[in-house]
Image (tube, rainbow, N blue to C red):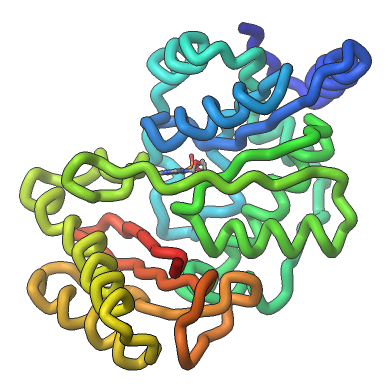
Length: 280
Ligand code: AMP
């Protein structure tokens, strides 16, 4: 496994892999890797002859009062995991490499970027779209792998790829959960034991919604009320949003149907967690 730190070298590596007839897969991450990330690496390994994992804690997707500086950085464990998974390259640029002095170009996916997490985290999706566009330009992947865990991010990136005719196929992988249902997240390590218990209310709320849908309920208002009722069982958890939206536009739906996105976000202590269910 090679560690590459510059865009120029990554470009050379990707071009050589393609010239050797390989399909290039890219898995963008911010490190602090867990089984959710690993599932993306495995999907990429299964479908691509050359796999690049990027590890970059992207400053532009964090708000001024968010956890950029304390975001977990676990290089030794991450690189050992990626080596064990047979990843070919870790792309680990510095912030200066990704945002050289004078850089002023950003990717704005208008509308979508202001919905869901974009509403509570102004500028977040602008940072995400920009860094992913840069990673695509640097790695030139045939396929790029993302988790359904960040479903709104997937919607933003799909729109960006379509709008900019980017020659990359997005592959979306299922949410990997802890045995008790909590969606895996690098931020779970911030939780105290008591908060870790409280955090289960996110997946419990989605379970209640799933149960109601399987019982024939399709009214978004009713399903959102069911989720809020579940959240009420953990008063210490502060709900950020509970929404039923079209997964393409992230606009609210009145009736949920196959393919709609039911998503929740909540603060457990100071940690913001998200989870979702794609209906059907
Ligand atoms: P992050 O390092 O948090 O930026 O995540 C990198 C990628 O891993 C994103 O595409 C996430 O959606 C994905 N991911 C994070 N957590 C999970 C999970 N529990 N299951 C599946 N994919 C995940």
